[in-house]
Amino acid sequence: MRQSENSMAAFELGKWVDDYSRILLDRAYYLLSDKEDAKDIVQEVFLSAFKSRDSFQGKSSPLTWLMSILHHKVADIYKKRYNGSTSSFSFDTFFDKHGEWIEADVADPWEEDEFAVSALLNNESFYEVFNQCLGNLPRQWLIVVNKCYLQEQKAAEICRELNLSIANYWKLLQRSRLQLRKCIDVHWFKS
Image (cartoon, rainbow, N blue to C red; front, top):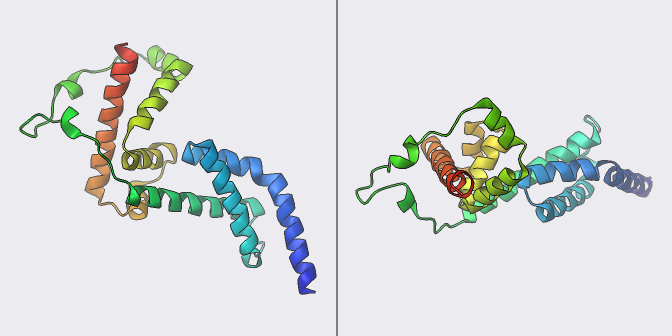
């Protein structure tokens, strides 16, 4: 009887691979912003699901269970990347020789015309520049930006996952926004 149950679970998992791979891959790509990483993590999700198939009790849908595994694996990736990352980024672009903020970077407001913002959101060239600027952020900053703005996680949850103080979290977001703004200014508005 036990072997029959295992072969049935394997059959269902094969069906799950067919039914849910695309959904899981899309979600993984959204969370990780890298196609190869997304493919790898989806494979890990199915491998984990197979290894722990006996723990699936059917109280939720298979997709819900697989998504839960996916989110835990993504969180693990971000923890490893964040905690193992070193950055040689220079803060000199934000501070003068006395350690004071360089106000010129903060004081020059962008045009806030609703039509202009809408046009940017539909402009592929702008997205290329934006993604390039995101890619220039130090890895730890990018992780915090992704979790905050793309995954829409709460500050407390991000701080807990990445072992950050709330003050450090807000500083990372502020510095990330300033760096993104400067990069977009240089590569989009002033080019």
